Every structure is written in C-alpha cells, then in structure tokens.
Length: 261
Image 1 (cartoon, helix red, strand yellow):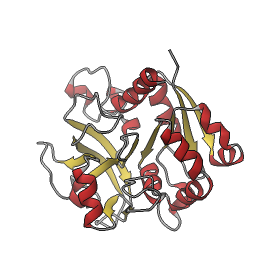
Image 2 (cartoon, helix red, strand yellow):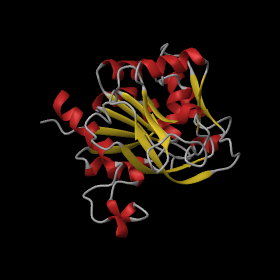
Image 3 (spheres, rainbow, N blue to C red):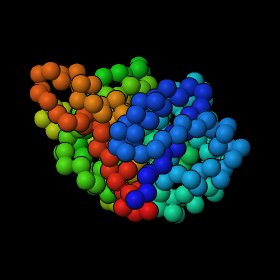
C-alpha cells in the first residue's frame, strides 16, 4: 500500500508548518516541508505528492492583505501545476492563512474556476481574535471530513482577518446549495450564534468550505493544534480520549490516499 506523501508549503511568515507536519505524521503520512522558492524552481516536485498543505501563519507579514502575496505566487506561477494536481484527484488543505491564500488564489470556493469569488477580511471586532471555538460539521462533501463521526468540533482560532464573505449572493447560494459549506461556528449547545462564538463575523457563521470536488478544504480554525487530547484546555476534566478533535481531518486525508492511489 502506498505511503501518502504530503508537501507542506512554507514561506516567509509561515509559523504552523511543524505542528501540521506532526499531525500528518501521526496519521501515517510521509511529510516534507518545502519552501515556495524550491517549488517554484522545480515545479515537477509537486508530482511526487498526493496532499498539498498550506499551513497557518502570517505569510509575508500579511502585507497587502492576509495570504494575498502567496496567492499571487501560486496563481501566476503554479496554476497549471495545481490544476493537474487537482485533476489527478489529489488533495489540498489550507489552514487559516492557507485558507486565505486558497481563497484569494481562486481555488476556493471555485464555483467559476480560477476566479476569486470570496475573501477573508478583517474581523468585525477590529482586533486579533485568539481562543477556542465550537464548529458544527455541515456537510460531508469534503474528503477531509467524510468519515468523522463528530457533529461538533472544538478547535482554536488565531486570526485578525477571518471574516469570510462572498463576492455576491449568487456565489453564497451556489456554495450553500452545493454543500460546500463544511464548517460553521456555533455555541456550546451547537446552535449558530454571533460574536464571540463567530469570532470574525463571518457571513452565515461560515468557518470552512470546500471546492465542488471535495478535494480542497479551507478552514480558519487550527485542527493541527488539537491533535493530542492534552492540547484541549479542559483535558484533565473531560476524561481520556485517544485523539483530539482535529486529528480526524488529517487521518481522513491520509486514508483517502491509501485507498485511492
């Protein structure tokens, strides 16, 4: 059976690459952390991997807007290679800054391919939000969430530009009808609510979406920061668990590759 290979893309300002590497390795993958300059110099490198991951951080200092510079590097230098990657049924995961990047590169929600149809902009609070949030799983369309039998996840967020909005109501209706909304912010009772449960003021409480194929997932919360049960802020009171809530996202991706390639 094939050992899944993950390429974690990093650049100036990436700061969650090693946590993400740990999560994928725990799930059974072989992982390489590769700088964007290395990939741009050798685009064929991408063919050796089945999962491409853009981790969290503040790439290029969030200059212009969060994820925008890296998004332009991808769109104008790697678009053809990324398209081939997706057509080969491979997976792409974007976490926090990675989600911002995928959205601004036009890879999410990808209703009309290669065009930016949404963005992640400044939080309504006008400040950096850093805490744990509850997420409701709204759709199993994404490969990353298909076999996760957990209706509500508890994961940390840390961002200043996490407010998801679409270009217009048509795009919002498309992603809703097509079950591309994977995660929504909820309160501790699993009910959709506003701030502070929705930390950025995202439209319709949207915390994560996938593309029409389910192969690309972008999310603002950090699953790599809740892989081990002891990372939960109340782990001593909640009792023992084998894995943290975020682990299953990585496990599902690895299992998909094992059974599909």
